[in-house]
Image (cartoon, rainbow, N blue to C red; front, side, top):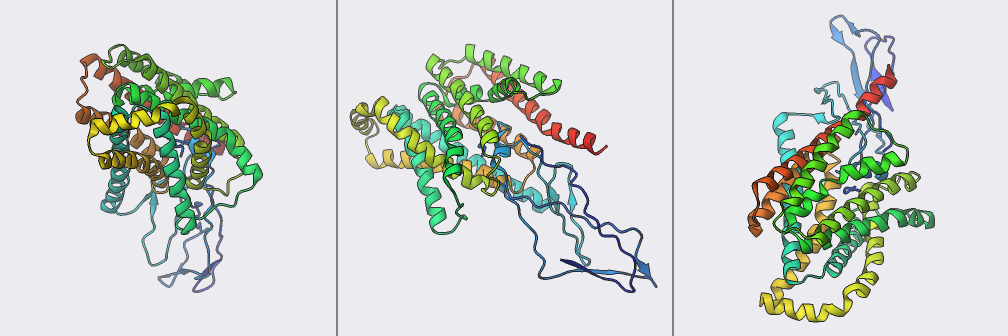
Length: 422
């Protein structure tokens, strides 16, 4: 409870204002979970000043602020991992300076601290993503068996989450049969998206796969429209440069391979369907936060994938293993590369969810677009892939289209909220 000690007693109206940006129903991206605080403000009917002394407002020490769980399906709608407007809690102390809220829903404190925090968040997220992509490609170059590698990466994520739950570093969610059944669909499409991306990485350059994967918004808009969702004209216009840029990059790609292109496209379809099914089947499990939801999807995906991996390429693993050791020379180096790819696959996805706790959807969308640029540039520098001018232009156009799409979709809930309020 919030108590007001007024000197002298004055009529005070205590009201709960509506959040400026309400959550709109919408990983993953990856998803892919945050805990946001409800916006509360105190409004008074008149200035409470008497004899030159303002009233004193103090908060009861026993007061508690609820921290609702984030609906995982709302994270998953957007290809960058965000689809809903974050809400923020503002606490005003009588003796302190009230915090301000930016139009994007972020709490604005001192700018140096905010900038440092954002730099740390994005720096860690980008670093983990770059490490994963580089070592994933290094392993696939000498051990071209993406089904086994993808299974191992999901296995690492499963073990990681079990460790977090066992040592209570992450609250273990209470699950039941209905929860597992609801996860079966999203986990299946997550499996398809992950293995298809790994297959693409094994056949073409990392940069090319990421350019094609930037076309995920196109599939989101098309599939969601078939299921009854509507999008404004700005969203449809934003996907045009994505289509054009991806097409230009594909026809000018030096390492072009039909299997690599198909894998990246199927990965887009898998992740989009995962997002859609998550939205529809996980609405009743809002008490499970995003990180725990992703952990269970990882476990189910491993159960899905490994038996199929054994069937598809299991007979080639032993011979491929000996060939890889002969190529690299030092077995420990090979083991280290595989382990790093598995651990950092989970870490960069975990960091993306934790980033949602501290930044707004708009900032996250821009950061996710820039992350793809950083990964493409890093992979070109590390593997020295030849890049033609038209290929670079097509990649830039596609990524710029993704940025436009993120701006159009993030601004849409804000406009709808204002219209409803009016």
